[in-house]
Image: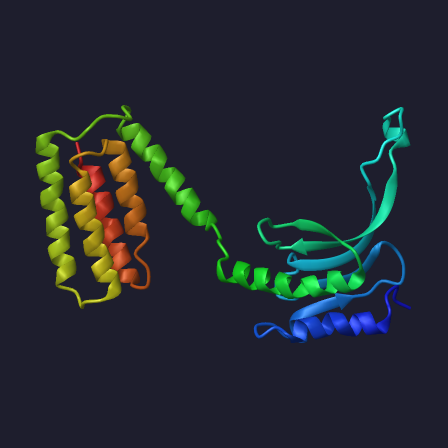
Length: 231
């Protein structure tokens, strides 16, 4: 038999039913019959997102006159362990009663929805490619602050303009517009950026062209040709 009453279990499920984003079937529920965990809710698609109601023993901050750890007083409190929380990935909050714990589920669902919509993942292959490219740059440009000479600026500007003309002949799309914008920004930055910083930024920009693989490959191929032929 679960530690908490059936009415409280139903209240927990009712709180989720209030959501316009999630349903009961999105979650796995556990209601242990012993221990400190009273209720546990896990998001089925990503189980690392969870909400627990627990009864834990914590310090109440009161010491006796000896002020020693051994004489520190403890008490049992109801806590919610929320993943994610309002500001952190894990937050622990104390509550006066179990109804207050249950009411917190609604705000947790809002944080969960926000987190899923703004999920950030780092592509390991992309990171490896960027690190490999940095190694090439370090070998080619040993001076981090070295700037382009006037002749180098002219040469690169001409090459970028040639590439821009080729892109302008393609069917207009959001990706082609983005590519032209990248080239324009890069031409302007030739005037002020150190060589190594300029090449790395240009490289990352060309990788950001999504949706049109052919265009992305074209930019990348032309970019590597530029770098390899750059003296």
